[in-house]
Length: 256
Image 1: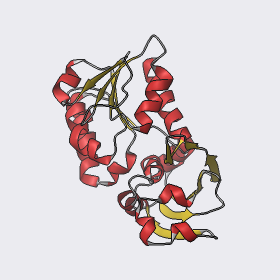
Image 2: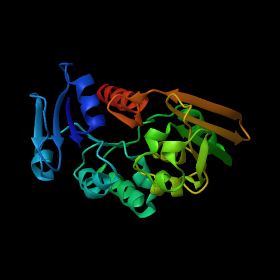
Image 3: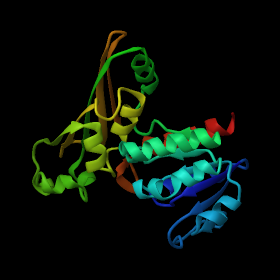
Image 4: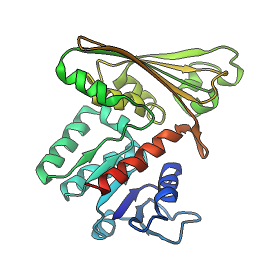
């Protein structure tokens, strides 16, 4: 199975490292510039057309929101199945509509991994049945919020107590914190939508990892979900389970 990666940062490298040793998988990558210390078994491309000419069985986007804007629609219109890791990009309603239409037009699969969260099958089921309320809280150590707008909302280097620096909708969170808020997008896509999911974001100096918790209230059930994820060794903003979820999604696709 030929896997095309868009981007080869921390997520792309981890996915490649976990699957490239399995004989059924081969990889190529589309990147803006040459990859430093690129694995020998990875073909590199800097333009989309020759990348697509390799006829990948699945393309995995793991390069951030701009990569979704730049490449996703064209990939889907070519008929190529696409897994999007940067789910927060779909908070842009116009972009989301274009991608859905492109996938439908070309008969291409558009895949959303669960990422760092779980129990989305239950949320998807109760949301399809009727009204549902979702409240999410994302808690990470201050270092995981460095480089985000949180730096302007609290003194990350001096925190001694948890600081809730954002409260709003999933759409606002995904747009305001694109490198940290893909989980809220996963909840919105599985549940009542970007404008209905309520979000709190917290920096906690006592946090040992990236903690995601949410409560669902519906006529069918009420449930709480909480997961404390170890961060990726190469990027504290990314939960290790995000990488594992993408790997599992690729394996599941390969068995269809």
